[in-house]
Image 1 (tube, one colour):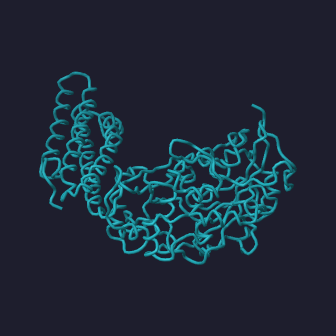
Image 2: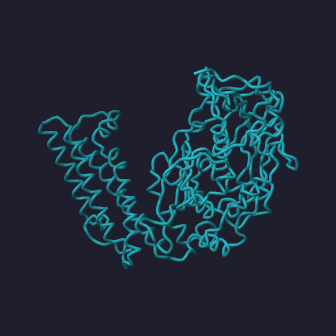
Image 3: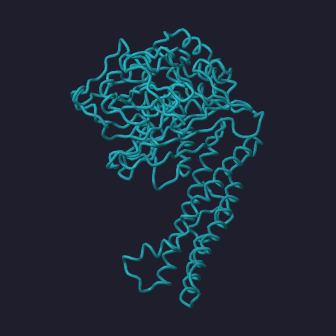
Length: 535
């Protein structure tokens, strides 16, 4: 493969490709995959099933940007009542496509010399001096580059297609973790190196998914906060007063919903290059500090699901390294069941209807970025079915389902402790954790419990559509028994790994006895005893 070659010197428009209008290239259609411009996305939104991006976070970032365009073009409902009409009538999003087509071409040029799309041209001089390879731009590739002493991975020559670089830029704006920029602050000010966490970093973003891209966008639109425009097309767009980098940023309130969903959480600049076949590529990038927003929870976090920390402080649901996202699904259904305003109140307001195809009509897709300080670790995400009128049933099923799994997991832990204490009576305190871990089946149990949990929710949905008066109890009992049998098998596999001896046979018997007693005792969830919970 040939190396990507630079185009014209920085600051000059490449004559062979005067404008690059970004596209969202991989869009799933019925039986095909096609490339669509932003205009095409809106014009054909109800013929497209879903976006297909490189990561869950990138998909969320693209949806955020499409919502921003809807708000900027006033393609959005003016009230909650009108929102319901938009959903029922499948309101066409073509006005957003027309608005885009009428925009000045320069506003959508990814490599404009002074107003590059979603970027900050003020970084141009620093890009020549401090720019790196494209690994810095892609969250999953950059890692915590401050911990890579030679920064070698950032210098690798790995040009990105321009469309990929555009989507990665959107993801940086929304999810970029805090840290230190790899550039000097001599030109723009020292604070340009202080990267603050992105608007969605550290919390779970919930997107309501419909059967088409158009329905997904309509579900997540809302009565706008502020007028349509302005849209953040560039850091240097006329009419915007931006922060400087000579002093600490003062958070600003978003001017409108369009401003909120297109906010530039990073200063980014991309350098264009020619690919081996003449395609538009990006070969060097630079990232500095961006805007900091002052967010009002009621106005700007309509999708947030609130949960209490160990200190009793209420904050939006966050990614957890120790608790799988599906164990928090009941919080989503609780919000739909109880919230009086925002996304979930609107979802609850939709009237039940008879389905025309199997499965739930909507999904609540929860996405978060799990980080270790400045290091992005993994995307955590899950989709949970929702049907209008069934929030209370789904809340009960998910809450009880999580409690049952927790009880079984705790029992596996205690069984491992008892077995380890019996098999290794003389073990030192320093060795205890390792010996218990050898016999702890929780590490196998938790991954195996997720699929039955999703099947539980699907069964509740199916029974609900069949007008079952109690669509939850029977599926919960079946789910509980399946998890118990799986956990028993996993525990026995761990205990059977102990070498044959009288001591180890006794350890095995004690561990199994504790497990069986906990599954049938008074403290066990009723479903594990084959009964219906009275809640």
